[in-house]
Image (tube, rainbow over all chains, first blue to last red; front, side, top):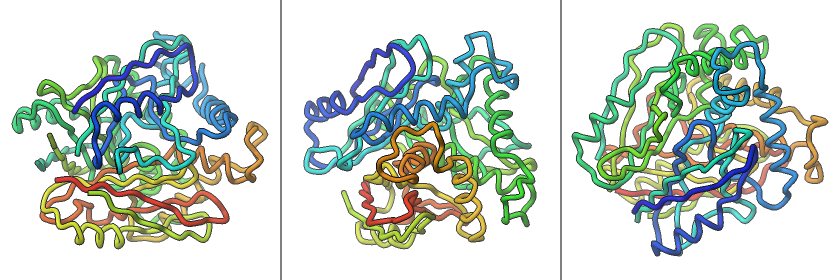
Length: 135
Length: 135
Length: 135
């Protein structure tokens, strides 16, 4: 079963989509199976991370921004802005697809795990995620 | 359903396999489902990236080559050539498996997304990808 | 079908779980399908790597430890120890989920590929992996 999720982002950073994902799962009612997420962009990505301390998300974001700097003289793809090529690199270093098993009608997320869309562009936008549920 | 794909590479870089993958999907005729790719190597990997401007692929390649340098004195696994240990690291930083949902008989790739095999060895070779299609 | 795997780790490093995974597959007896692993932690991750030369695993570990250093002044999430924030970053740069097709009752791993849990904390612990098998 295929579902769609739209995430409106207002700039770089991690957006928790766990609640929306859980709602989609409630809707399809699968006792045991697999949930696969796919983000239809190459300048935003998916990760699973700690949802307890927001400082973790800030540190992740700042660390990756330092590793993949803007205005790197190496870049030749610069027409779409200084944050575009870094966004593609960050997308490659994280994930475009993620799979989470379903058990007892629930995603088997660990106690501190949340599912995040990571927006890598400054201007943000509407990000589309396709979700596949199977039994 | 399992399918196999062989990609002949002639050296480091990104090889667009979207057309071959689409042909495999046409062959199995699935209206709605999931396509999972798995590369049977640890010195080549899989990514989804922008297919519009070839400069993106060059920049990705050059950026990762700078991050994961050859002849790093840290390496002890050096018997298979200066590009072998960097290839393993690059494989870990990108992806060995990727999943793409199928909707209306099509991979739900975004408008600018292509599927790539990333060859990390200078000499290249024949790279084997196993594809699993499910409904 | 859902299975569970517990991996006891005694500190940072790569733990080969290929044998346990193969045993789980033998138990479910699937001729053709997909095996998806999911680690229920954000300070440990999953990778597929070369299982021939143990030096590859040492180099991977040392390289990533240098890239993602402890005591980086950038970190603000420091309450859980100097290895905690690096562990979250390493988890993001590697993988939380992995999928491996099954063909002829076997995981289609390449000849040199092993499946590893990567422990990123010094103290280690009991790491839980959920495995989904489908036909």
